[in-house]
Length: 311
Image 1 (tube, rainbow, N blue to C red):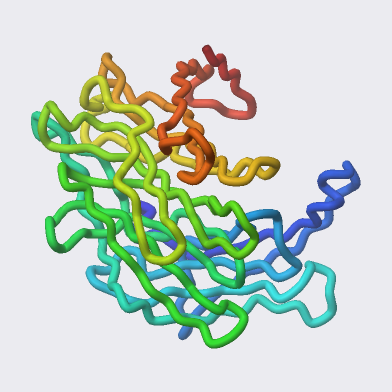
Image 2: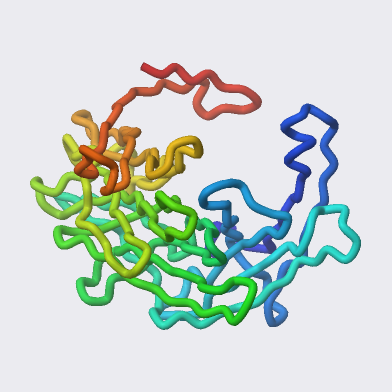
């Protein structure tokens, strides 16, 4: 069956990270039968440490990603290391003040479309006891695809969930990613990487980022790479978010790298890698330093091994 209807269950493999880094043999623990109210939970979004890897408790988020208008946020926790006596996989939920909804496809010029798939949570981090997360959603005000930025406060205590929908004034947002961007330990700043597109020739698909100041304020979109053309690489609706990612540079405060999609001149999707700096870094205007690259992968489709040539 297709992925929308053929879902069976989510599983999670827990590994020992220290053993992996030291080259020792890897043991693992398989968590399965992850349910809430007798129903399997879909799309476990792992929550990584913001300023540094964290543990031993591990957190995951999920939601009802294929429904129109929902406010449930599933909050899951592995309570200890994999061999610890009594370790559990707990499933809880919170109710957000802001609903999320199944997003529409993003529109380009000439009625070309880009897939947004669903409203699952795509990326998350934990810092100062709070989880910040992002995903696609419907922006009900415009009827277009928007960015949902959520926060779970006081994760180990009386949890509350809040959400904000950010809209593209010229079209659609899609496939956000998020990373901590603080300068000091108490900061809750974040960088929200995002793809964007619009229905006119002036709004070709590209990528960029929005800075969140940790106290409710958002910067305008800073463009990392503007599109050179609309994307039309396959028959039907083109994929859009396969190459979105963001990562804090752990040895340099306030520096985050992102990767996003833009439309190449030949209408293929391209990937841009850009470095962003915190607005308070001296001499910085939050302007990115993009590095475009082309990649050729073969054989395609790959079976057991593939070669990737970058230029």
